[in-house]
Amino acid sequence: MAKTSAQRQSEYRARRNDGDGDRRINTWVTSGTDFALDRLAKRHGATRRQILEQLICNADDAILQSLEPDTPEWNTYLKRYAVTMTEKKDRR
Image (cartoon, rainbow, N blue to C red; front, side, top):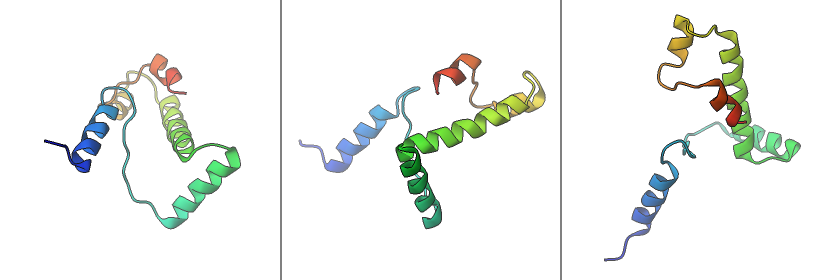
């Protein structure tokens, strides 16, 4: 039996969301935020995805640099997603 478009799309997303590869982020933002993202992307000659990734990684890096390793605050921040320094460098 042939698969529906929804079934094919679901399988595609499952393959893309496997392991440490790409992850889908689906959220609503205000129109002002959407326009700002477009402006940033155009100004920097980048994609919306690249701008979002850079903003998120920069904010995460700032927090990680402000925390002392192996402290309760460090462990609390990283409790679900352990990040090594090598992994941090690889994502840039």
